[in-house]
Length: 270
Image (cartoon, rainbow, N blue to C red; front, side):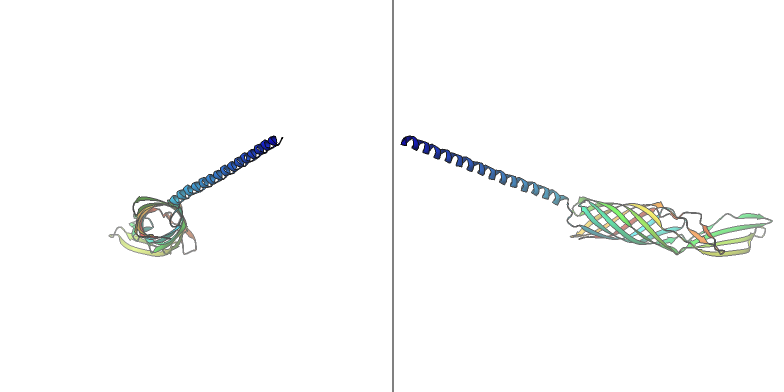
């Protein structure tokens, strides 16, 4: 009986040790799985962080300031335009950003005399009419843009821009009209003439633009750029004058703001 008791005791102790060993092994395996899982998560986070680091911009904001010169697409009222603008870009991605823009421009009137063909009034008389625009208009474009940037070479980038602008116009343009009655039987001698001046009123407009710039980094975070583009009319207005009797009269041509432009300036990342 005592031997049987001892054998049973030994067997019980053995089973206890085996169970403890099995339990210890299970705990060890569980710890290894957790550690491996943590390492996997950390590795995945590191890979994701590296991917984000490659696409995230080094600097979130960029300020671009430039001077511009514009060639009007329709030269009935204006001959040329020039001014300056500033654009603040928020880079959502190293190659993609959104911008707010503002500027000021001076559009010079086309200062030339236009004379209509003489109108025959009969009995040796003819009427000649001519007109001339002079002065200038101040324009203040405000709006936003979508900007994309591509690296062409070390320190050299290509920037593409598409935007919309609301253009506020302050007109100092005047219209000078001249009429003369001439005697065609006596070497077109002027019998009588009249000259009148009118202020030209212009309503605000709305334009869209497409542009491209080449940016070259001269020092860290500072670049110089040159570029150009084209702006189109989204909405146009018809200029008006006020006659002496108080009547408002529309002029014969709409005020078009479309045209090609060139620009150059500096940019700073921060």
